[in-house]
Image (cartoon, rainbow, N blue to C red):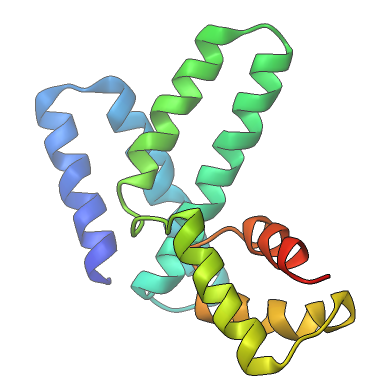
Length: 148
């Protein structure tokens, strides 16, 4: 297994020893999701593939938080928020909006994009450049704001 999977396994063991039930259940869920993905693809997951699984779990938590907040269940939303923060610790830090915007400006300049018609080309390059570090919706929002 990759180093990320080993780190998760190590953290799982320490959570067991410290009897941290919430952390333990979240890490077990994560380890299970990684194992399931490993079975689906038929090989050991690289760190990049494991991060994709973690991002998916974070996104699920974000969706759950929205639903629980709408359903007036703040205690469940808080539990999901805590799980999400634990999962985010295994991901590289996300870029700030200013960092993304300056990068997208460079891409717009290098591709010669003039209007929203060129958005696909800019999005393709930006998605490749920021793969895994920035949410695609965020990139799209910035690109559409920059292109007239």
